[in-house]
Structures are given as structure tokens and as C-alpha cells.
Length: 103
Image (tube, rainbow, N blue to C red; front, top):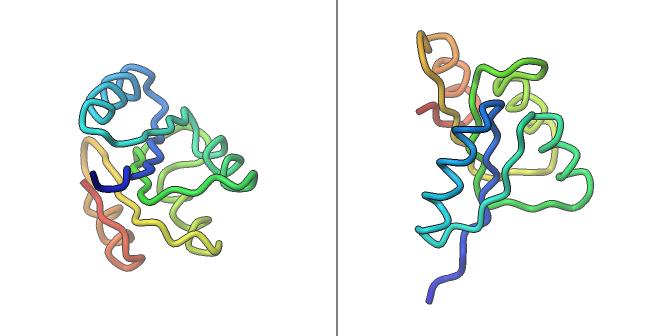
């Protein structure tokens, strides 16, 4: 059996977190959920390591793009995927320039 993927899921919508957690668990993806970008950064500061980061773009406080900027300045180089609803042209341009993918 292949090694499990450690995924960080960041979204301010608890229903989205819950639905994605259930789906990803059934796919054998080890998932840690965070309801705010600052909570994810705290986990990194305390030694958390993730293979992949999936984050909402539009969140109160620190947005997904703010999170991307902070991550780009850190030693963490996990694959980053960002998801958003609505108009995303500006976010997509920023993510392309910073080696992230916007879904």
C-alpha cells in the first residue's frame, strides 16, 4: 500500500470542511482541517508537515492569497492548491506567478 498523503484543508466554511474531510478520508487521504489560515500557520510553527495544502481563497482575516504569500517566505514547500467561487482572474494570475494552482 502506498504511503498516505498528509493534506491540510483550510476553509472558513465548516460544512465544506466536513464534506471534504469525509470524502478525503474515504480516499485514504490523511486530512487535517483548519477553519482559518492563521490556525494552519500555527500548526506549521509547531512542527506540522503536510504534503499538500488545499485552501479557500476568500476567507475573513487572512485570505488564501495572504497565506500563499506567507508560505512562499517560509521553508514549507508543500504543493498548494487554492479553491474559490466567483471571479478569480486576479487570484489565478497571482497563483500562476507563485507556483500554486487555483481550482
